[in-house]
Length: 331
Image (tube, rainbow, N blue to C red; front, side):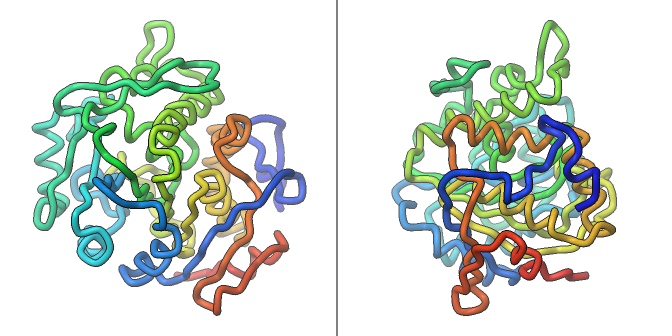
């Protein structure tokens, strides 16, 4: 791999598979970027999903071009989770999702209200969840209605992020479940500066926020990452997002959040230099890999995994170099 992929010693350094230690988790993979592919891979990881179910999804800024298509989610919910509820929170920054009223208008613009309702969980205030073993927080403020759910499906558009380096399941929960004023402020603010947190500290705070949520749900949470339209920009940038230059890959799913995000990063790292450069540089320059190493330190999952190719008879991929063979360099 190129020097920019492996340079550095902290969160700017991508850790190759051969340097990782510990147990392995199972990650399922399909190249089928469609509602059918989404359903097929989800069905491999839905064993503990039941009761009142939340679907944590980034519904996007107005007319955002890269979000998971609402048409896919409509079919997915109808077939797999007809009684589930999409959940969101308001933003920390001023914009089209800052207040609940603004947020609901954006949901309508993006087509979500045409087939479902969305629970903006901090519409009526906050709740707190304990952070076990954290160094920054003892508790995290989340949307008030979040703890009323029995299980959660984390449906994530995997992409870059201007501050986090990349947005996977960890970012979707850590920022996306923290309420828009207190929780997100705890993550981003420092010494009176609303956006004053350093890079490594930010990754750790996002991860501790995530840990509070997944500890609450226990075994009743699962993770699906959609590797499509992967701009270096987050969906929070909407129509201002940088052009997509990273090839589409497919959909990954696991009951292990670290394995899901690590495998997603590995898929990008396995691409040819010209295809991976922009997104890997975004991850490295923002110290985004600290998300992964800190999840491991906090005992949130495994960064080693066995990849199950569900498109080819559940072929098991165990050798790290074989991940390269899995990446379909689609247009």
